[in-house]
Length: 158
Image 1 (cartoon, rainbow, N blue to C red):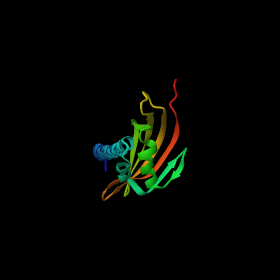
Image 2 (cartoon, helix red, strand yellow; image 1 turned 90 degrees about the vertical axis):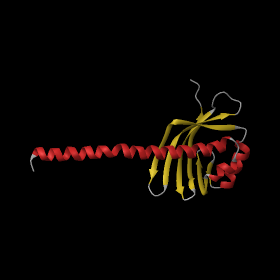
Image 3 (cartoon, rainbow, N blue to C red; image 1 turned 90 degrees about the horizontal axis):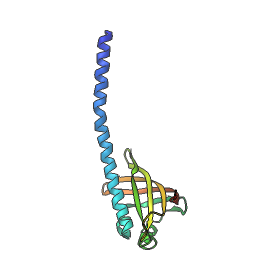
Image 4 (cartoon, rainbow, N blue to C red; image 1 turned 45 degrees about the vertical axis):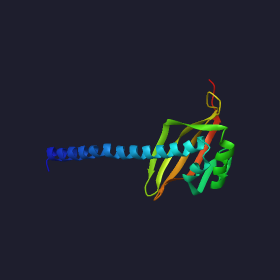
């Protein structure tokens, strides 16, 4: 094979590979959009005191790791917390620009990002934290299976 023919073959293979990149990026954007929809539904329920709506998106075997409160595995307890101690006290605001979504083949997706908490009646958030959510795609829809909520702290007033 001549050098010119080899270079032409390499160039056409490289161009074919480049043609696949937008399709792969589109699939990632679709997964990102799906998970952002799930996040909006989950925290829409959280912010509106709808523990049952929140619970509908949480797996029965939830594991919730929190850097201040420890490990929680009680789905009913999470629902109760949304209905009582969270309700009317504060709400969550997502920093949408911070969110990353990664596929987990054969299972679902990993979502990570930063969120803020604002007391009802306040003008600005009082705290922030980081999170990592493991979402499972089931035949009946998406379920939040694992939560790692960490790096909680006040908003620095610079």
